[in-house]
Amino acid sequence: MRGQRWIDAGEVGGVQAALDALPTNGGTVHIPAGRWEVDAPLTLDLTEGQHLHLTGNGRASNLVNKSRTGAPLLLITGAVGERWPDLSITIRDLAFTGNYESGHGLVIDHPNDTMIDACVFLRHGGNAIHLDGKGTNATIRDCRMRDCKRAVFAQNLHHLTLHGNHTLGLDDGESQEEHLYIDRNCREVRIVNNHLAYGDAEGILLDGTAQHVISGNTIEGFERCISVLASRDLVISSNYLHGPTAVQLAGRCNGITITGNTMINNPEAAIRMEDASGSGGHVISSNIIRKSVYADITGNTHQGGVDLADARDCVVHANLLEEVTSEAAISALRGGGHVVSGNRIVRCIGEPVRLTCDTWCAIADNLTDRAERRPDE
Image (tube, rainbow, N blue to C red; front, side, top):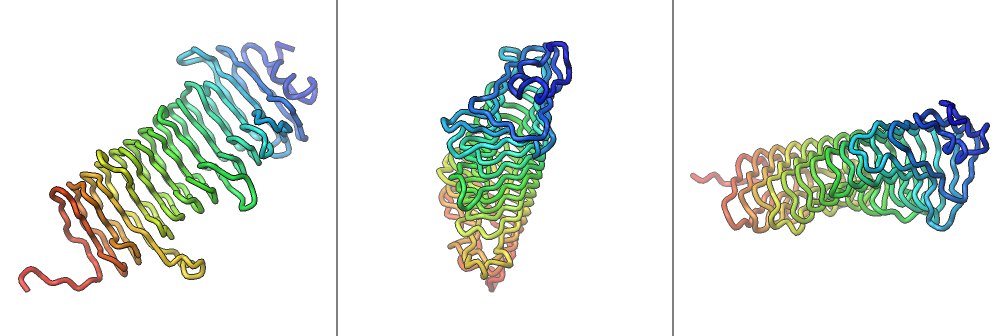
């Protein structure tokens, strides 16, 4: 059995038996169509040179966690202690089903050279995908994660890509944390072209981390679409952000680029900075901030603007702000060193720009629909 490179779980006595039969140089473990129920975690500890290709027949191959003790469904451990192991993990075309008292759906410890592709995760009491331990080069693409406590939790991981995934919370389903969580020890993460929908907290939470790109996502129905805590060197671009707060920067954040986003129906704020002393160097440009065509139908009569709080040295340029109902469309409290220029601010309730800075700021060429007197009049 150890010499086989293709192992069918239906022929060897089940999924755990198939994983146990993986040769030392790796191979394919196939889970045929069917409902595969387990009461205890499925486990596999890989060694140097042992490659895994775990595959099924799409949603028809359904791994079901019957545990109600918080145990995970599948736990895979990579080569621990190896800096650049000769090892790859590919998981493709499987369904992972849990319950509200079960744990994580898929746990990968030391996820080096890992691909999770076209899988479905349903109703897990923990995270749909939990990536832990030191790892690099992981991709999660085209997966659906529905009604789980979290969709993806990643820590201590470099070069993670999330592409084309769909996450969803349900009104009468699991009480959810943020859908995507990236911890402070992750670097060079790309979160691109995903659809995150209807959660109870944040769509994306970046917790004290750095050097990521968040681009081309649709994020709707969260209290905070993107929440950034004490992080730096991020690009947030070309996203559609529909929720009470589109982007929140909290704590000491530096060097964040927020550009080309559509921020729609954000009654709390489009961009809000909190506890921002020591923060700054942000560029906020070419964003559209406005109510949606359905604002009156949904009863959302408020739209927030850009609040720099007490950050410093920010550039706010070439944004379009329409019908902002906060006291000022663009505002700053203390801080300073800001450049606010070339913005179009129209049909707003409060002041177009209000900067009460403790040092110089440059305000120039902002076009509003307010009648203003020229200096020589």
